[in-house]
Length: 360
Ligand code: GH3
Ligand code: MG
Ligand code: MG
Image (cartoon, rainbow, N blue to C red; front, side, top):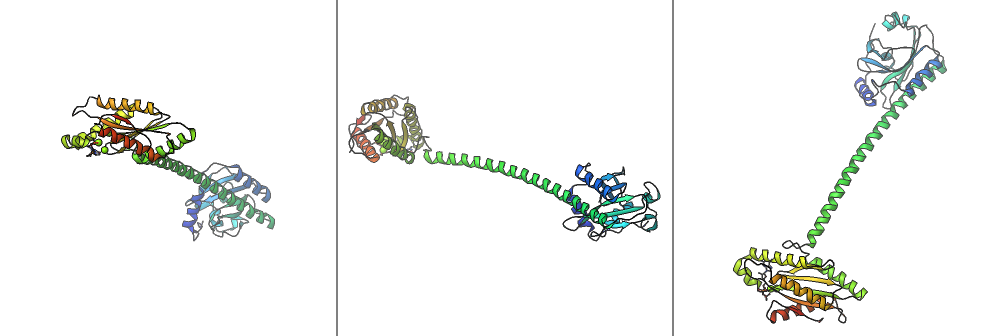
């Protein structure tokens, strides 16, 4: 019994076959429908969908035969795939040198007639056949042969469909994983942006708002106060004799003092107030809805809080200037200048005091 030679494209053929992932899968209705139709159309007792693997043929669907695979050596289909464009028809296997001593011819199921239409992939690889088998010699009519080829194309369509579905599933999984990663990146980016924006608004030494951010808030609060006709007060504080503090106790002791002043300021702040480090040893507090009287009371509380703090190195005091809007046509910078001028008065008057100024 001469074994079928291998197709010229055997390696590529096996590769294509494995990509369809059909080998050793369970029976499926779509393929069983095709063998059923093949057996009816060709009026035979046996019909198969067979895939020719490296050393075996795998029977994906069968009618009239209870075998799920055979060796490739004895497979009629191994011969059929050598001519992908044609139906291989063996009218009487006992009279064909290729099959006369085939065990399936010599014993059960005693094949006499075989017709196989190759399953040809879009890339041209013959993967197996849709074949029909009878136990007596016979031949296919032309319409039966054409129908068998049509059924073989249906098998390939099934294979393609199945592969497309699997690919789609994979793509959807990949897409979901990319989307998850993208979401994580976006979250991280938002966190970074938020922390960058906080960084850009914060004074590193004291943790208070910095001057740039304070200027933005001042403009907003000034607008709001104008619109609502509400008072807006500003305190400007400056540490007294801070240069000599630094010169005597060193810069890092000076830094620590600034942190404590900042903390006292932050602790004195009411919900809607804004405090900031305005410059070296200068701080500001913006007090929405606060009249001159209210501002002076708060300024005094802060001044006393700093004076009475349990300073370890040397007593520390601040001078404060207060300015309140409204007071005629004013701008945010006039509020600053008014508070700064009042602060200067406090310094001139001997420091450690609060002066209520007016808009200049
Ligand atoms: P006055 O009572 O008139 O305000 O006197 P002063 O010495 O506080 O004023 P002056 O403007 O002469 O000095 C301010 C000092 O504040 C100078 C500088 O060494 C110090 N200073 C500014 N920024 C910092 C800082 O970030 N850390 C420390 N340790 N010192 C600072
Ligand atoms: Mg100063
Ligand atoms: Mg100072």
